[in-house]
Length: 614
Image (tube, rainbow, N blue to C red):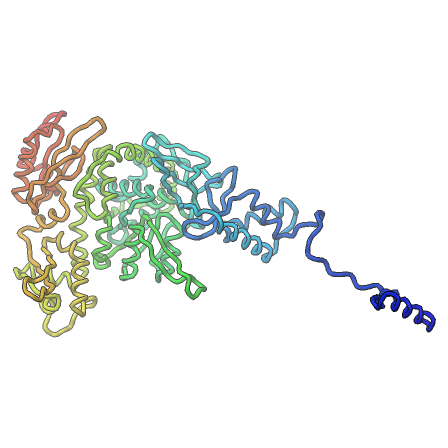
């Protein structure tokens, strides 16, 4: 207890110090300790988020892909070409949890992991963006195929051969839950077992092989492979087997998407997309498929945001089964490769288990045989010169190279499907079907879009079928979409302006003299000169100068050419005269139709070759 004397002494010292004395200190009371400033001493233990960031920085390079998503790629060791997403079940998040457990015996909390990933994402923003591919990639003159295994092995394919490597830097690959593992390819493999498991004709099998080989090309549009056939032709099994070689997946087939968001998830998860039992293709889905074939981008609002946009850009090989004739729109039909499966006789039916086991047993042989063939195609592809190419020009040019190394006729076989697809499109479109019926009956049309609507009406009661355009603008747009199909069916379509002062937009429709003529004017299938060079067939040619003649410059192998039964006489004459000019290793059969194979009159047109008579 402080006494009066003590108080007097304290006051005396305060006065002596000019009044600046701490009474608390003078009273012997200890002041409270200040709080820590937040700076940790050098021997303090780092926090869990700090440990996770440090571990990730030591082992991974974190960056943004061209799609705007953050990825992490190992700096060394197996899988240095595999880019991991930062979040998700197969991403860096899970790897960091294992690293912390192995190093410290600790399990990170969800908040600690989230904090660490936020820091890593921020660091990725300051680095250049890099391209990240799914399953396949091109690096110069080599193709790279991710095998999908834990070792991160990559198949490197060039025109000189293929081999398996551990890293393909600078190429990077991402994987998803739908990425399956490829078998180790057998260099001595054949396609015999694979062909035996598909109930298709020889012609269609070769088209399937061409599609599968082209599916390994990452930066070119691929036609939609449509497997059609009656019930019980094993369309689903065939689709699984085809896609399972190109892009194995634990879920090989998917159903039709409900909307654009569902389609984005479906297309983003795997390289080859297999859609099963598609009986109806709505307009939005048809447009989405066309964009997926060509790699065009689609935009939509990002989830859980008000203004951010998500860009959906896919270039995918697509397999579809059970496509009805009326399900195709003209723009999608131009991007289709239809293959019809044959009926399986009862005495040749096998259980699904036996078919699957046999397929899996020969899967490595099939992959090895395809890679061997792909190397041969890549070797000659740079020197292939192809003209008169259809809509899927890159795929057609690839088939020309395939024909060169195999002696097949896949280009001709592919282009022969255009007529069947055109008929399917017209039959399934009530507006196009009504136009064709009137023109087949001998009528012609020359007028405005408004007049076209009235002229094409199927009846006078006004009961228009579903899908019929309701406005002149709609009629003009519908006609433009089906114009390629009408041309292939022998119907001429011309959009022009009148010569009067009003310059009115008008349309002229007419039935050409021969359906084959109109089809050939749009997509010539006849081939002219073929000259043998040092590296296979060098293709050159001249057009006959007739817009309706099939004798125009294009590309084809010098064997097994076929012709259409409806080829006009002048085309056959042009073919015969072209053959007589001096093309020693080529022969002519006017236009491809199996009905004329072996025909004596046609065989007489074929000049002798170095192997003897045609």
